[in-house]
Image 1 (cartoon, helix red, strand yellow):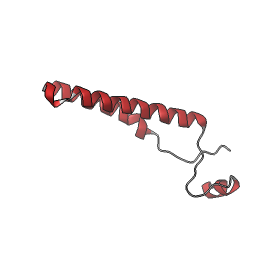
Image 2: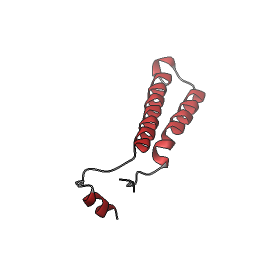
Image 3: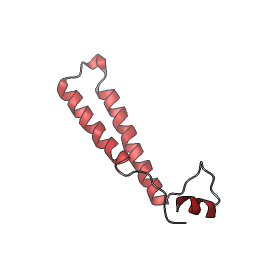
Image 4: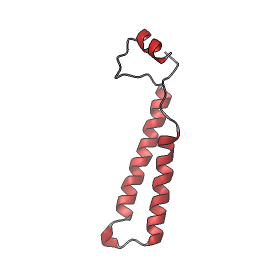
Length: 80
């Protein structure tokens, strides 16, 4: 079905179709993940001597930000 739809839309093997909403959601999740990475890098600065509690909080925040990025696998859209 996906190949047939790709042929109909004249897509090559390096192109895909996704809805604008899916794209915005993915971009939002990636932005949150980038912010989490920046926060963790700043919070775990070795010159500040982070505690075990700091590491746990950083890991929790990083996981919370990363899970939505991988929760929904990218799949071909069935919309034109």
